[in-house]
Figure (cartoon, rainbow, N blue to C red):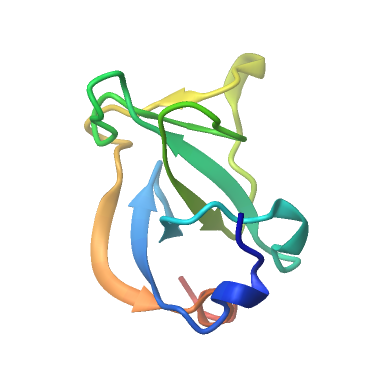
Length: 109
């Protein structure tokens, strides 16, 4: 598990997921080190490794973990659901941009 400080100079891909912009981080982050103003969620792949259309986003994933995402506002899980399944509209869309965690936090994304 990595601390925010260990990855603070690394650039990560910006991804749109569930209609919000996020940083796509393919490293397990220590949630206790995430800067204030950011929220971390994990992405799970399905049994076949597909995470774009068969995966989900969850507060924390142990099995079939794909990546973590960092967002500026909490993601609302409806009806006390423990995860949100990806579909064609909500699945991740990579924007082509990259930035550090600090730059993302201070950006208009």
